[in-house]
Image (cartoon, rainbow, N blue to C red; front, side, top):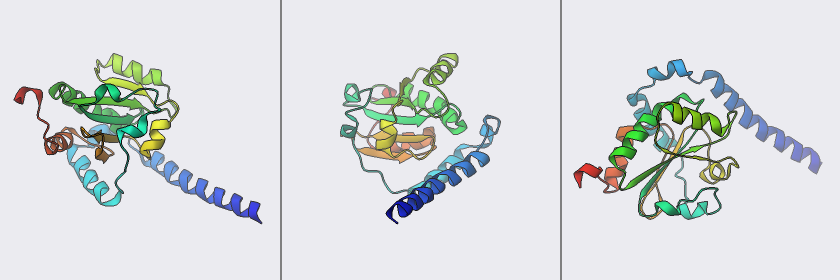
Length: 193
């Protein structure tokens, strides 16, 4: 009886994970559709997420065992985007991240974390190289970071304040939303100092 219950629970959990994922993938945008997803859509999604999603509780110190270290960025705001190249919303955000990195380089570090899915890290490396993207690119090949962050979809973006605490946890975002959060933390562009 215990084995039957364990199998039943396992089946239900797998079913609950597979069906929504398959449904999402069937309905998700293609790269051709990405232009139809504008900043107003992102801001509306951000408002909905703020109401629906529980706030994640973790700090930079939770990432001590990662293949790359955040220690080098102490004293800076860290904005981490967990992404994959096949995700059109992930790709659409990259120019905004590059702009933020250029305008706030003294106080902000953008870290792009490629999460393995059905593509290799080299795909992301080549995409960054081919498109002259100058952002720090890391890999979460063992999924440790995804596990700590509670990754449930792409993109997942996390901003840490100067104390290493989560200041922003969101999915799709844009330049204005990031700047608003930075201003709330008292961070100004490099030129305004």
